[in-house]
Amino acid sequence: MKNAITISKKIILSAVFCTTLLSNASASNNMLVDKDLVKTALTINNVKAGNLLSIKDVNGITLYKEFIEESGVYRKGFDLTALSNGNYIFEVDKDLEVEMIPFTVSNNKVVFNRDAEVTIYKPFVRQENDAIYISQFLPDFSKAKIEIYANYNGELELLHADKIENSQLIQKAYRLEKGSYKIIINSNNREYTKFIN
Image (tube, rainbow, N blue to C red; front, side, top):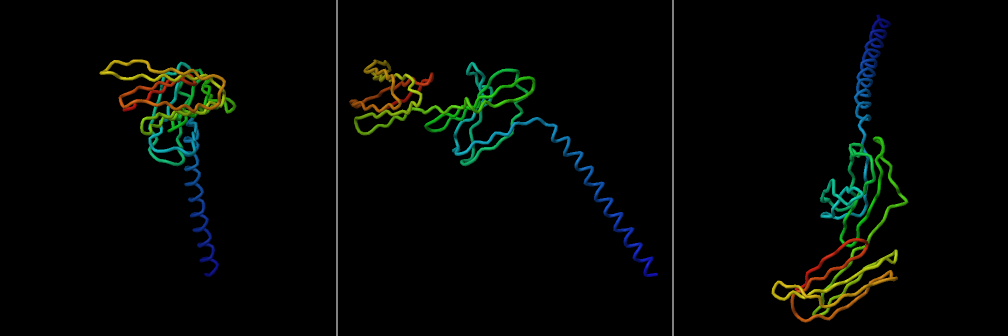
């Protein structure tokens, strides 16, 4: 009798074990279907809420943009294989810099070009009393141009223009009378505009 109970317990335990194995086997089949999805995981450190993430083509046309909602580390999966064959850039526009992460899509394969990743530093404009201070880091010694326009009742008049060449660091100070001004800085093939009152 004891043997019959022991054998019954073993049969029940074996049935439970086989049922568990079968249910896990069907779960793994579902997981295989999920693995067939083609996604590229993007992780960016040191972002702030309000930074702009965009995907651009080689002509600078924005195909996707999103304002980052939380500060810290940004993580998201993208199906980049939906893009047509060509070169693209992930661009993260932060307070004082723009990170550019180039990638290529070719026959539904995505390849990131880590060697071509670039950080562009944006100009910093600060007003203190009747002085304007402009600074910008140009690690590749690229050219820059600063133009200061006075706004006289809606009409802009060029007051001052500076061309910067062969310098890694822009550090300029301008004394301005009280009024309304438009400052345009061209560097790194981009234009930055700042209004001062």
